[in-house]
Image (tube, rainbow, N blue to C red; front, side, top):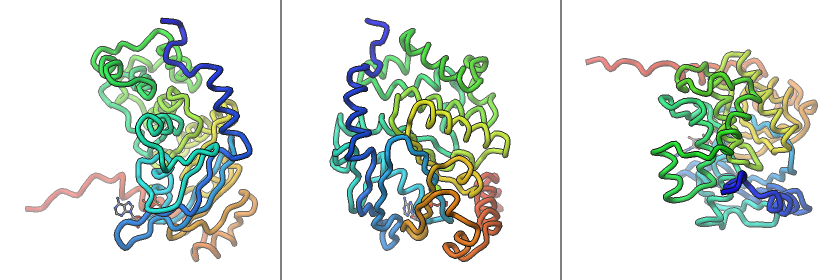
Length: 297
Ligand SMILES: Nc1ncnc2c1ncn2[C@@H]1O[C@H](COP(=O)(O)OP(=O)(O)OP(=O)(O)O)[C@@H](O)[C@H]1O
Ligand SMILES: [Mg+2]
């Protein structure tokens, strides 16, 4: 096998790039809707995201932020509307084409979702499984038979974020901030076009939150990947994002530059001050982090 076996071929990249960045746009949501029973989680959302943009999505609990991201990579099926990319109707993709789309949209989650008992390098290499199918993926999982090229890719990704020395440690020995950067490395091994990050810093202290946001900005700026990131820290959204989209009850109620999202604007959209917005989100995340109460007999 050649050195680049399994890696995205350069010629295909150039061809794909034309489609992704062309006039028809990288990502376009048209009337995208998701209902859960009587709840309309996402309500006729229209949104166009050009290639290479870093978009912050904000909103109070239940606004529909997670549902929106999960529909984009089809983890959740829309109830209505369409998702388009490079002229393709993503909502209609099935089978192999759907797997390829999911590979193109890497997800990063609040809880990192690493395999705690596996070493860091293997966790990163799991991102390569998006390029493998059937028996090869199964063999890799049981025997760790990734190619030398893939291992070099994984190490380079870890090194980029200052984590090369942790490669052989179990994931569970890392801090939350380190684990989230490992999760981002795993996402990069998918060679995605788009990173969908759902509250990636909600479980982190401010220093680690900054490191993770710096890493996301780096992949946005240096690799040209588009990033859609759900955030509840408005200051973080303003600092890192080119554009902020605010949701309320499933709808987009603001779409503009960070500078346009003034404190007064936040207040008029949400009916609470920015401090109250932050406190509400913090309280919710703290409750999620707290251990479950003991059952009383
Ligand atoms: N699987 C589900 N089944 C039923 N209702 C759901 C489901 N997922 C989401 N919802 C509902 O859809 C609405 C939007 O939820 P979503 O999780 O997208 O909001 P969010 O903005 O991500 O909120 P948070 O900030 O709390 O993460 C909420 O009313 C939620 O209760
Ligand atoms: Mg959410």
